[in-house]
Length: 234
Image 1 (tube, rainbow, N blue to C red):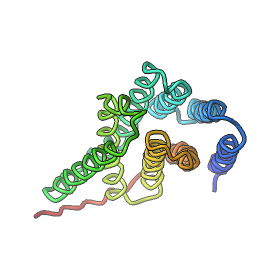
Image 2: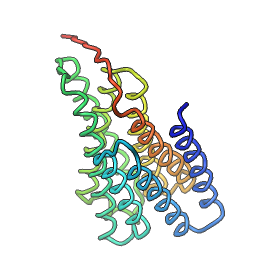
Image 3: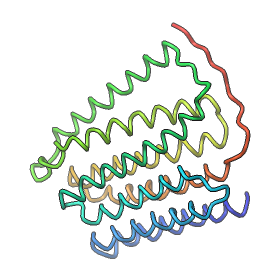
């Protein structure tokens, strides 16, 4: 393992411990500040990373804006900024994977599976909406929230397709980074909107993992990838 990857691995362990400790020892406001500081740390690492990737830096900048807005999440303006900045970050992350799929030929089967995944996830979203407590009802009907949900679904499909097509360590880092970030959003959704505060621990764990794996993905920049040409027809 290279020194850079060792540093990232250490950072993941350190920030997981700090985030979980902040949840158990301090109030929610303090723990939200810790989350923001963690995101800012990875943004600085991305800024110093060589070769510099403006998309990677922009991703962590947007995640940092999201986590700062999360401190004041109950305010309608910051609530909207949280979803917009997080959604924009996923768009940038998705564009990184989409570029890697420039030789990607969509088959009828893959298109069908993609549409099924979108339909299932939207159905689950509507089902979760029906479980939301009255306190948060006005927040969940925000169109920004649904736009964000659709963006994450499409980003997931891109990440899975990228991983399947290249099937190497770099694509695995990318897929894990995307999935951990989405798991973070899902567990935060359960903790905040469904009033299960225990899930905040999973949210912080996955959020740090997501940031770390995206940085591990960045350490593979410049390495050639072998494209696996798959042509399945139905």
